[in-house]
Image 1 (cartoon, helix red, strand yellow):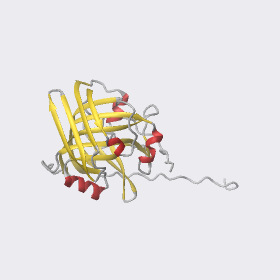
Image 2 (cartoon, one colour):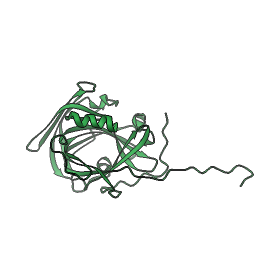
Image 3 (cartoon, one colour):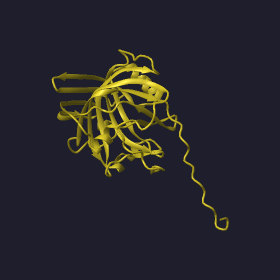
Image 4 (cartoon, rainbow, N blue to C red):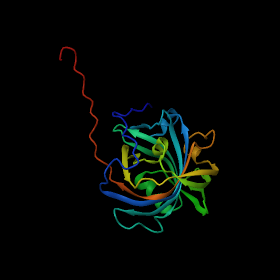
Amino acid sequence: MPQTPPAVLPEPISADPPHREDLTLLTQSWLDLAFLHWAVDPADVAPLLPAGTVPDTHDGVTYVGLVAFRMHRVGWLRLPGIPYLGTFPETNVRLYSVDAHGRRGVVFRSLDASRLIPVTVGRWAFRIPYVWSRMSIRTEGSTVTYTSSRRWPGPRGARSAISLEVGEPVEEPTALEHFLTARWGMHSSFRGRPLYLPNTHPRWPLHRARLLGCDETLLTAAGLAQPPGPPVSVLYSPGVPVRFSAPPRVPRVVSVPRPRDGNR
């Protein structure tokens, strides 16, 4: 089914949040992140996006991201984060989206996590595609290794093993690196209606990284084609604290009917 293009121009890419922080729903930190990205044709991923969004593009190309990290101390409202249940490895497959209001975001095709209770809550309460997996993150000097093997609900055995060497800090990210990392909301659907959940956090501290190995089947398990080659972008970040806010109220986009002949 063809998707409706944005009614307004997409908001500018910004390294800092383009919106203010309203009522905080969730707090958490994202730590020890590996960002791997492959370029894809927007037409190939458009059918995988929720209604009301289209692929967000940079120079005519969109991207699929494989992002592995450590979720740390998820908490409700402004309460202290939960140390055990709220702390776990996670690896997500994500696409890049823009809606009719010009808001850029990400769409998660899957989120592998190692804690069953958060997975269950995310799936059934919020309809977010969390899956339960065996996972680990190991650091040896400048090398970070992330492993994941899916348990439930499947496809069972979908896996990833990523190893990278962390390099020097990025003094000035490129336009593409800003596009891939400075994403200030999540597009989804809830009870059949489009949902945009904004987030705020400090500017990303990024490092160049050298990919030592990547053996994964999470992209194909998420309905995407197997990449034809290595990722075009590999980055690392030590992480940031994050706040998710309530979905904003936005004015409806109303089309004004054109006058009929003779009624001008």
